[in-house]
Length: 120
Ligand code: 5GP
Image: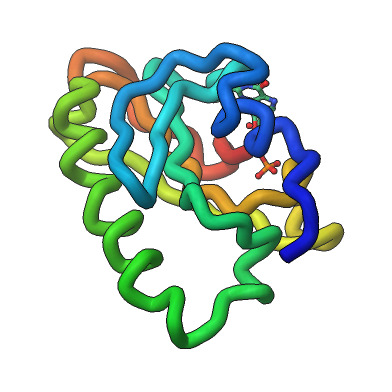
């Protein structure tokens, strides 16, 4: 396995701080440093998987766990009326950090719905 020199690798190793909202042995979730909505957090695997293209069949349960965590954490963060999820992949997908992550973002129920173009 190649070394994880991404910013998320540094967050996982505690080398740089993050605002964590969930952690277990396989997964970490923390607030995005540049939120695009009232609430914007990222769910990452602790296993180093650079992009969605690098996922193998053995990762299926891990990815399922990450996706199932999204609504649980979104509700805890106050997104009671819906939210958006996205996974950017590769250069054409505008992926900046090459450690797989699910974006979860949305506005609080009393706010305005995301615009159709709002994204990361
Ligand atoms: P990508 O474009 O790769 O899908 O998204 C990477 C995300 O990571 C961006 O939304 C960016 O704001 C976020 N990000 C980049 N560096 C840091 C950091 O040091 N801490 C946190 N919490 N988020 C970061």
